[in-house]
Length: 124
Image (cartoon, rainbow, N blue to C red; front, side, top):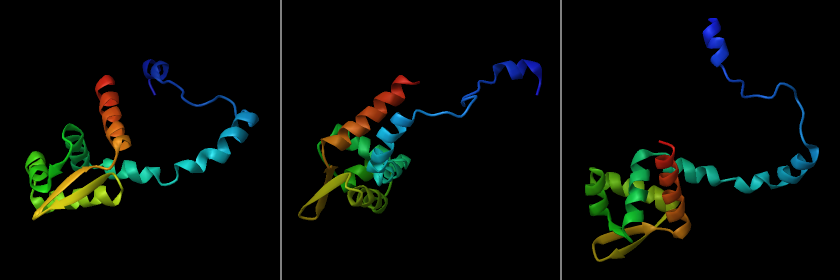
């Protein structure tokens, strides 16, 4: 590696192995509380589902047909993504005759989407 590049390399690991035993004993028993949370992020890691979730933060509820038009897809594709969000307990739905309306499951999901958006905008 050229010397000018060597100077720019930032070491992001400890130079020696040590740990705070008290801290580890305090945190480690709680670490399993996050089990299953990765599924929420996996569901939202798809760009189309994230767009749908964001659209649902802008409106209280949206018809499947409106979602399809907003994201530029077929109603079948929109339904597929909405169903996945519903199965992950991120969205809920109600039927009104032949129409199906979706909304975010609760305010926590709304906050999650809004916070992620703010974080992304701030870091740009």
